[in-house]
Length: 267
Length: 283
Image (cartoon, rainbow over all chains, first blue to last red; front, side, top):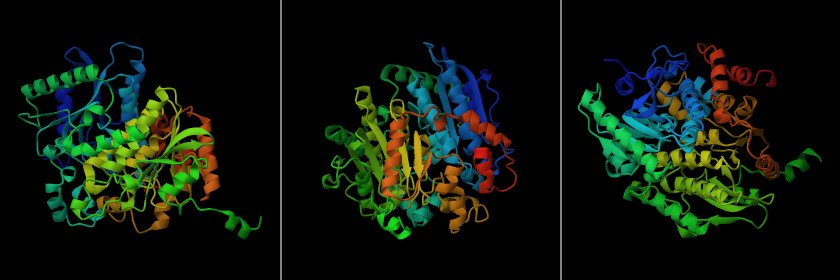
C-alpha cells in the first residue's frame, strides 16, 4: 500500500487506453491525446511523483511544476485547435490531495502557477473546448481550483474517498479555532462544510454522480460507464453553452442566484 | 516639502475600510454601491454556527468612474472574518465581474478593480466559498478578454488562498510594502509542513518571502506603491489607461517552467534566489 493515492493514475490509464502520450511535461503529469467514442480528447491527471524535484509535491499535490505544466498542456490544445471546427475535449481526472505547502512554493509564487492552470482551463472553455472534470478521489482546495474547477461540467464517482473541500480537517480546525470533533459535528448539519460527496452534490455544483464497481482499479464496465457519461457531458456542453451557469440553481446554493439577480437589477 | 509636512499630507489607504477605499479610488461623486448594507443581503450560513453575520457580508460592490472611465470596484473588508469569502460575498464579486463582461459585449467598456484583503475561502462556508472563488476566476478571465482587471493588495490582511490565484489572474497587480501575497497562509503551512519549513510567527521571514517589496522585485506584481491614497489612485488609473497587457502573467507557462528548470531545488530557498531567478539583472 503506497502512502499516496493511485486512483488518478489508474483512471487515467483506463480511460486514455491507447491514447498517444504527450511528452515534455513534468513527470507528475499524465497527459495523453485519444478519443471518447468519436470525440477527440486530451486526458490530464496529476499523479504522485516520488522523485519530484520539489520535495513538498511528491504525493500528488499540485505545486509549481504541476500548475505551470497543466497550463502548458492545456495551452498546447488551445493553440493547435484554433480555428478548427472540431475541438478536442479536455478531461481533467481529479485526484488531488492538496496544493503543495512549502517555503519554496510560496517563495516562487505557487499562487501564480495555479493561476496559470486555472487561466488555461478557463480560456479553453471560452475558446469552445468542452472541459470536463471527473472526480475519482480527493478534490481539495487550491489543487482543485487549478485542476478541475474551471470545467464546464463536473462528474463525481460515488465513493467515500471522493471528497471536495477547502482545507484538510486539522488545519481547518486550527484556523477556525475549533477542535476537529467540533468541526465534524458542524459539518454534519451545514452542507457546505461537509467532506462527503452527497453533501457536496446538494450544492448543485455536480452535473452527475456515478457509482462504479471498483473505484481503485476500474473494471471494463466501469470504464464503459464513465466513458458514456463523459460523452454525454460533452454533448450537454455543446448544446447548452460554455459558461458555468449550470452550477446555479440548487436550494443549498440559492443565495448565489439571488445575489446575481439583485446585482443585475441594481446594475 | 519637509518630512513632517509630507507626512501630514499623506493619507493612508491601508487604514481605510473597504467602502472608504472604493470611494477614495472613484471620481468624486460617482460612487454608487450595489447591494448596500441596508439591503441586508447576509450569509445564510454563519448564524447557525454562532458567528454574527454582517449586513454586506464583508464585500462592497461599487460602480462609478475612475479618470472618467466606467469601472466597477469589488472591495473586500479585511476586518470582517479575515476578509474570508463565503457564498454571498463571493457571489457579489463573481456576479459583478460577470455583468462587467456583459457590459463590454454590449458596447459599454466597464473595467474592474479588485481590492483584495482576504484569507481566501471562509471555512464556515467552505465548499460554497471555494465554488464562488472558482466563479470569480472564470469571471476575471472572461472580463480580461475585453478590459483590464486591476488587483490591489494594500494590506493589512494580505491576499491568500483561492483569492491569491484570483490575484494571479488579474491583468495588473499593485501592492504596498504592507501587502503579502501567497497561496497558503503561514499558519496552515506550519501546520502541514512543520515549524522548520515555515515559522508562522516569524514576521520578517514571512514578509521577506511574500511581502509586497519582494513580490515586486521578483516580477510577480506590476507596481509597488507607498501607502498613500493619491499615489495608489494615480497608479490604478494609469494601469486602467494602459489597456490589456501584451502578455498576461498567468499565460506564461513556458517562461516560468524554464526558470524553474534552472533552479537547484535541493537547498532551502532564500528571497534573493527568487529575485535572481525571476528577474536576473533587474533585481
